Length: 150
Image 1: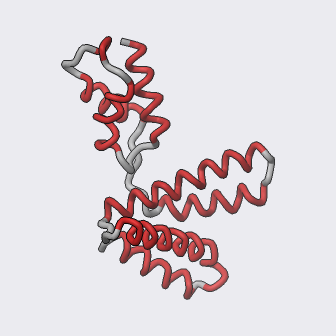
Image 2: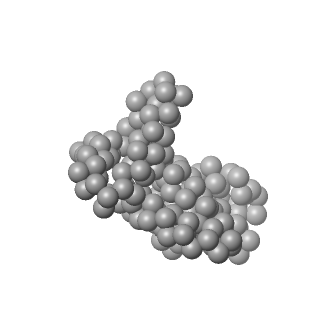
């Protein structure tokens, strides 16, 4: 079953759950709307990888919002955002650990002169391999540490 079909099925279940599925329903509707807008903008139909990218983008937005709500001590918004993140995590691919990301970076730069490598060059090599499976900040930080450490 594709991710789009899974989202549609889960949306129907959330509708049947009435009050209990309210948060799940709103999150799924937002994600499906983002998917549809992306398809319209790109004039294409997204496959599971494309849908995963949209879901990762939604997850990133919520994590950034969560950080801001924590700074402002808004417990009501923190709880709501955490509930939304929990719903989105169900559709995200298994995330890579920092050690796995570091290994991918090391593999990408192996056999090359590390002193002449720029961060952007390494990121271009690594990001296609970890797209949707690792946060860009984690990848960036790992690349920076490895380039400085060698």
